[in-house]
Length: 81
Image (tube, rainbow, N blue to C red; front, side, top):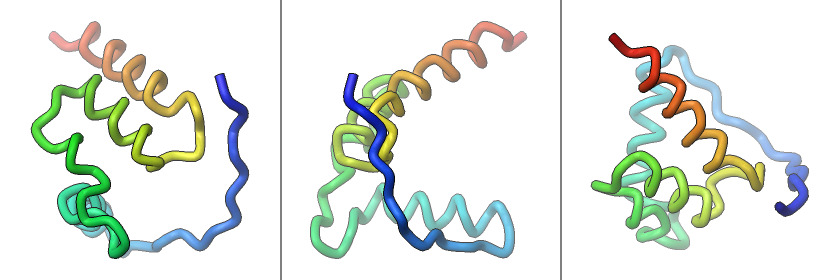
C-alpha cells in the first residue's frame, strides 16, 4: 500500500449538513473545472465500485480510502435490522 500524502489545503465551510451534501453531490455529478468527467464512473455504480472509482480519481489523499469505505459499509450492513 502507498504512503499517505500530506496536503495543505483550504477546506470549504458550510452552514449546515445539507449544504455540504449538495456541494458534494454537485462535485460527483459535475466533476471539476479541469475535468468534468472525473467522477463519471461513480455515477450509478454499486457502493464498492463507487468507493474504488472515487479513490482512483484522486478524491482522497489516504491510499486506504476505498478499503475503509467498503469496510464501514460492510459493518453498517451487518448491523441493520
